Length: 596
Image (cartoon, rainbow, N blue to C red; front, side):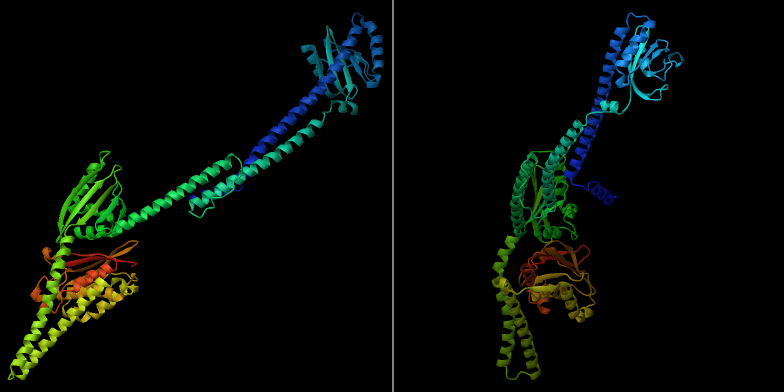
């Protein structure tokens, strides 16, 4: 229906505005001109008739002056003389009494006593009522000739004069056509002038219309358009200037917006700005990451943050404030402990009831200080353990010449195992050092995450089968980012190795991409295993940190796998955190930027 209406409007406005205006006004003007000519023609014709009637009435008055005071027996001589005087004009004279009887008629074909009663003749009727009257071009019943009749009452009788309605009389009564041609000439001149005026007006409207269309479609606009020098052109120029200022203001606001977005995205706190209806205006990645960490379930939309039970105080504060107007900003902050972290959540409600929520991880700085302090100790400790073992076994072999060959072989195998562990440890330390010091030198390429994860799962299929572990890979095809293949592989491989080593047997591992926005993919790597105590969650990504140190070393871990994962995620523009699932098990939630 909307398409049909649009098509009808297009058809209705097939002609340009200037042509429609021109035709509308000219149509009215031509109707006026035609009405004026018709009226003037009628007036001219009536004037000629009245002029002829006045002339005949003058004859009538003079004839009556001659008849006045005479007996009817004396009329014939006077009427005959009068008839002879105007015979060249074919003047017909009739005398009629007020009963309509013809007393005299000078027509050769007329016999007055035998003529029909004239009481019903129009000119006679008018003379009886108003004293005089005329009738234009009526054919006489007596002579069969058309006449122009003019009658005047004089007491008890009526004198009627008639002229034959011949060619000469028709010319006399015809209107003067000069005024018609003059009116036509003036009309054509005005039409030409108005056409030129509407053409200029149409040029202004067309240019303004083209400008409006381009502005609506945000297309490039030539602001140096030369509009006609009239009022509409002046208005159009003002509109162009206003548009230029608006564009400049818009560009300036866009630049400031980009600065604000860049600031938000690089901020070390989670920031989210919402309107009064709790609809997202702008949020940064850290806000979403912290929200997922505080929430028991992953947030598919930012607005779901208001349904998190830990943030009920903030939500109630927003709802309460929105019900009453205030000219002051309102602030509220709460502290939340979740998954081994402590967050400070602050809400600021502005005058227009829009609000900002910031989430700060207040444990982060302390964690960094502690990590730096323990790093040297941990490296020394972790290197000391395999070196001491190797040194002890070799010392026993060197100082004991009689050691059995089987026992010597066992000691050598243990030395070899410890040297392998030392090699892996040094390799992982090297990887971390390279990521810390030369992250900008790492080569980037287009990587298909879906294919990478599929290949990785196939590589560990034997280990998964031995521990009866089921992997549910829910990644859709063609999830591609620009990054380093080796580091991206190490993220998913270390998380998989960690789950295989420590989560237990008969579990399920789920890999999903639960959200995507303009800049990031949001991933979840979860298992249904034994999980981790809350006090350990915040330290899982520390270098050399182990939940169960004895068990970890026994399984051959270096304590650097999750640290490598975290650094690889950071290099790819994302963040990562760990939390326990409600149904049991451990979940890692992390983001990876589409373009690094």
